[in-house]
Structure formats: structure tokens, C-alpha cells
Image (cartoon, rainbow, N blue to C red; front, top):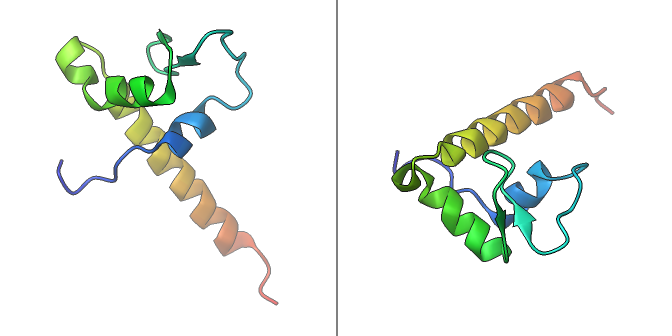
Length: 80
């Protein structure tokens, strides 16, 4: 899936909105593991299949769902 959109730190932070913030790190919202930095959680997501997790799939689906919702909101917004 080389043409697929890359998961960004912004995507990771957006996914965790409304969730309790771990005191020491950032939590992968797919597998619930906690990492010390945003970079380490991003690296985990990018290589999750090698670790036996499907976190990358989770975040890609989440990104697709958010994009779909954004487009639906734009389509439903009244034109000025």
C-alpha cells in the first residue's frame, strides 16, 4: 500500500482526543500500549504488523472515516 496516506502525529493525537492521558507517554489507541514519545508511538504504528499488531490498519481506517465525515459535513453545509 505504498500509495496509501501516511499516518501523521496529528492523526495519532486526534485519535486520542477525549481519552485519559497516560501520565508518562502516549497511548496507541489500537493496542493500548503506552510509548514514551509521539515519535515512538508513530514508529510502532508504522511497523505494527511486524510486531503482530494491526494498529496501522486501525489508524488508516480511522483516517478514512474522518475524511468521509468531513466530506459529508462539507456537502451538508449551506452554501453562502
